[in-house]
Amino acid sequence: MGLLSSATALASVIGLYLTSSTASPVALERRFGNTGDVIRGVNLGGLFVLEPWITPSLFSQWEGGNNGTAVDEWTYCEALGKTECASRLNKHWASWVTESDIAILASLGLNHIRIPIGFWAFSVLPGEPYVQGQVPYMEKIIQLAGRYSLNVVLDLHGVPGSQNGFDNSGRYGAIRWQETQTNIDRSIQAIEGLARIAAKYPKIVDAVEVVNEPANWGLSMDGVIDYYKRAYTSLRNIAPNTIMVIHDAFLSPSSWDMLNVPGWQNVILDTHTYHVFVKDRLTLSRDGHLKATCDDARSVYGFNTRLWTITGEWSLATTDCARWLNGFGKGARWDGSMQWEMNGPVYPGATCSGQNSISAWDSPTRIFFRQFAEAQMDAYEAGSGWFFWNFKTEEADDWNYIKLAQNGLVPNPPTDRHYSRYSLGNNHWNIDISSPWCSN
Image 1 (spheres, rainbow, N blue to C red):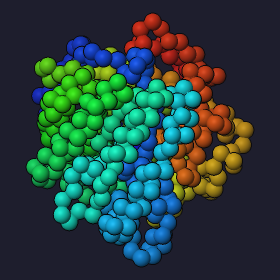
Image 2: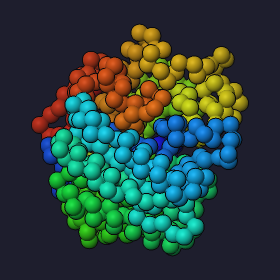
Image 3: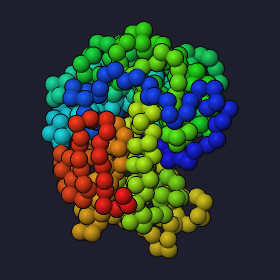
Image 4: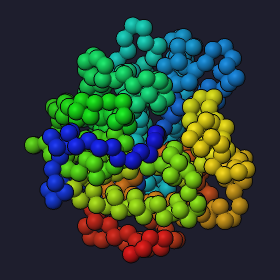
């Protein structure tokens, strides 16, 4: 989970690795999942990579600066010590995602889950506070997914040194992933670990994402592409038929155009779209949020004809009011409790009260969120599908797919759309989507 960013000029890199928009897509010999349909899934965030805003109960003891501070998984384990950290996390791993959750997700008409995990599940060096033991729990979830006819994407969500400086990389702060070759080698080691799991469950795990949200502003893009090429080789050596997912590094899909590496097959692009982390989206009216999805649909549709594209993270949030969404102990742009470019709230009197609670939403708000869900589903299915962030949360209802679906605020099943004209043609890669808030 991270920022929606506009494209950055990368002519020197793109000229080396990308071709014109008229090129054929990277070959995709296998379709997603058991049906070959578009991906409709959710993320199992907050499980193997802690984020304070998803499970604030795990971090509440440090609220107000008591007994030091834990802001991410690194500092969580550092503050507790390995023995206590392992004890608490094993309880968390055993309880945050249950068989009941998987059964509910399947009953909601979804076909995929995306499982974020950190490199430390496969490699911990002396001096690193992380603890291990995640893999058996992950394999149990994969087995449950298979039992309920769901497919799985494994996502390397955090790499050594951090690829973006976000807490969801495992360590908040500086971006140091590319500072040492050891960091890259350990990332590849984690990919090999995920590849072995994918090879063990070939009918369930259909894709591996080789790094989540690398930040183009803090990394060499030449280095990112070199890493993608090395990860491709490692994945193919162990799980030759598994789809490889690459993230767009917060560049627009059109900036990548066509990734043209001779011999590459079964590679797709992941882009993340949120409406709360940049001014241009956060300050939109409700109608503006709906209309913005039309631009997203055109972008995803156009690029999907050149490199298969999924929207791996999105939500119904139109405010950043979820507690600690912007980091442990931080406020929100929406009400001005966090310092940002507007130096105050998005409009005079803006409040976070009730913004994240379904019980506080009036009828017009509920109608809007249902429309917003359908508009985004329309947009992302103009590509190859989507994963909502997140499957559930402790507090923030606008990020909680299960709760939203159970309250009729997202379609159940996803094809039960009231406000869009939905048509699935014979070719599942070319979905005819037209939304009433978009001009034809």
